[in-house]
Image (cartoon, one colour):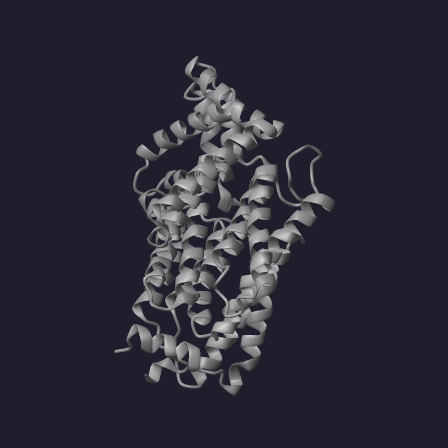
Length: 431
């Protein structure tokens, strides 16, 4: 049985066989470029995801022909967990005898993430590390998109093909991975570190400028998680200093930035109006949507109301006085909560599938953080923070409604989990 140190040595010493050289080069180019292009070019994220899947299939076919592939329990677990959502959709469709192709569009990307994880685990460490600087440069390209390729006029940062909420959340995710991977690569020169620190700051800045309050909620949670995982390296004075810096920064930002101040004040005003019985606000509509979704789910607990049933049910609910017309109209757009939306539409299998999308990659990354290898630890930290961010984003918006965001999440967690899980020898079926 391979030990932790043996695995690390295999990763460090194993070189690509001749039939894998092309695959590794293509992997390196794709995982480096997709964070840079994701927020800059419309359609680039789905295109690079598809190309990476094709390279993974080519790689695994070659691997099978030259010795076979042994998929271990961790890989099977990840593959099954990420493939639960298509299964939940199919079960619900069978129950309601209403079959549609569109619900599988985004869900299939999660399933393909398992294939990418298996392939990328067998790549060289240099191949995976090529993505490291790409995340930092991705925030630079996102800033360029917000400056020169913005969409709707106004103070909120976005790009011509992505709304401020998804734009700000994705930019923050890029920045977080950039910061968490500062010491990931073997090249630890000052310039590389500086670019990654700037990438982190740009990600935070773009999230603030986007006005996406889900990202603002995620920031302190991610920071606390980051500090928690690094707590054994911090003294009491450093803890106090960090708390003071965070508090002063938050107060300063609120006092000096009019748009941030307005967006935060809106939340408190929305809550006050909701308590007074007025729900025609951003916060009030969300609360009423969640209430309507829970009502529908409790009456269709096991298989939900069907992948498209949620939008179809909103108008009848309004007509029967179960919800207001404005709530029904908002519900036909989205439920503003990924987990609740899947639970209502797909029942308990949908709930399990939604949770698995976060739990499976997070568990692999946490396992990597317990490794004795510094590169696996860094990749694990980046992965945990990335997944945590998306879990929080999905509490107030259906972040995975967009196929490009699903592709971005699926490829990134496969990459970070592959780096955190450690190496697999070539032709591992014979080991």
